[in-house]
Image 1 (spheres, rainbow, N blue to C red):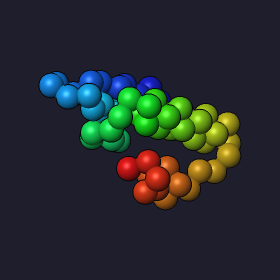
Image 2 (tube, rainbow, N blue to C red):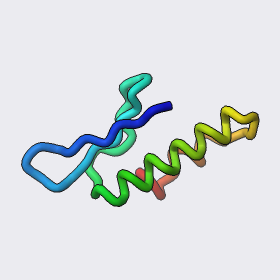
Image 3 (cartoon, rainbow, N blue to C red):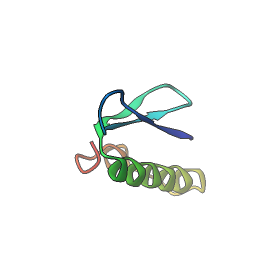
Image 4 (cartoon, helix red, strand yellow):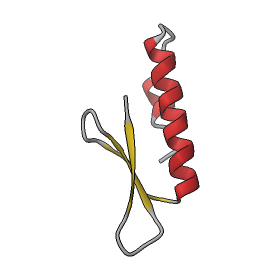
Length: 65
């Protein structure tokens, strides 16, 4: 699942969006946190694709929202 990081206009904040379904994962976050979140989401997607079960609440925990 590809994720996109976009800079918000007139601020130093970023948005993380799932390109496949258009769902916004993070609305306004710093660049470092957005990049870390994309790495984590790609890790979970690879783990799920390889057959390892990933619980839904782990994907959308308060740690990354």
